[in-house]
Length: 374
Image (cartoon, rainbow, N blue to C red; front, side, top):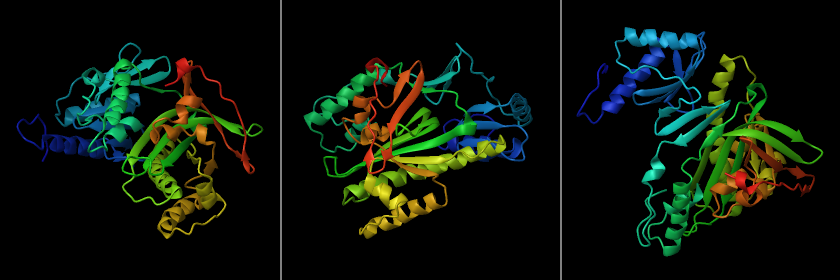
């Protein structure tokens, strides 16, 4: 079915239009679907012009060259699709796409919510929480919430209502020297039903290694994060850490393969992936060829070790627990807020992380202005 004009009264109209527009980009504009998702398209190797297009039903947002943009307009006219005029992102002229507002301030891109925070309301004391990182994810799990659960949820909702202008900032990075950092964490049986909470944060960063101090400093952009309840039975602390790393590495692999399509087109080197964990037991299993007697974990550990041996994961680092950025996605009172690992100073995201030295961990004091904490 080929859709040319809007359809009304048909439940599947979104699917029909998306299929038509998606096929148009692949066949007429020489684009291919990324491994991250079918809605993210990247120009193929046969296409001389570079472009990335994100698609949401019948809306698109793209990063393209001028030549590709002109070709896109020509092919749109040939297909007789009716479309609104293009809008270009400029300072003072933000773009609205899929419920978000993208604005440009100097060299920094900022993504904020369109206005969802205005519709938030605190939950009644005995009302089922209907708003779901950790506080909201935890609230969504409660089938019979207590008054304490509702208070924790209301605390998070009030914070969102009072900080509606906050958002994610994306800084210009040197892609030729960039790395994908995956911070993973798992909290064993910390939910009320004794299930484990798994979390990870994936960032694209430029790194400054400080070997003499045992630290590395990163200037980074957050590109993905997750806080979920483990659907698998976890019988040990190591199990929760393994499942958390598996989830983070799986998503990092999808992002890494998508970025490889970009770097290949731009003739840039491959962006390596670095995994950071605060679990020494898991670190030993992967790097020092340690082992575990838990057979249920062996397959996951062998898969992670194989990725490490193949250099799909370039490096696995054991870091200080207080510096783990994923801590905020698994605990109600994470060390992230008390130590200030992720800070915004002069509109730059910077994180100072302590790494293992020999058998111990080096001590580095991180001083942060609380006003700059996210």
